[in-house]
Length: 145
Ligand code: RB5
Image (cartoon, rainbow, N blue to C red; front, side):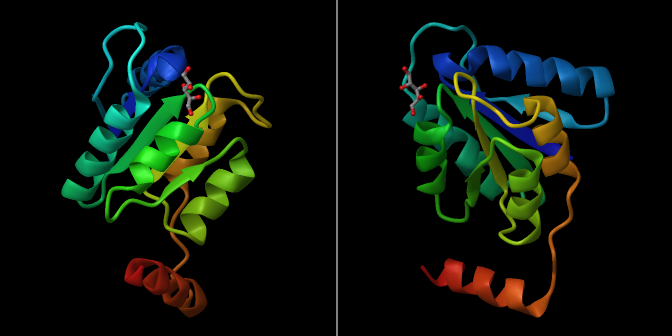
């Protein structure tokens, strides 16, 4: 699977950690859309970049990271076709995929997490979307705006 990842300075270290985790697994193709260093940058730039990349490549997923996860999730969600879910637990990551068909996962590096962020990522990537009619109907309503 192709996975686009991006952060601001507040999520930079977590971005590196997630990249290391994926490269050790060797299972997925990770595309790092920046930034390249932990110098201060603006999260809207990287949320948009990841969101646009995910929408452009069907079947891909995205991961966005900032201090809280909030700013960069808002930025990603402004891209049409993106459903970005801010998750600090495996339960939320699972539900975000199953019920909402989230295609971008957001997490905060500086906030408390219920579960290990790497386990949250793994859960998000490996959970299938629930195709039950009620979920399909509600997701279609989300698409209508
Ligand atoms: C950067 O200082 C911080 O505001 C940012 O990483 C994020 O938490 C915004 O939502």
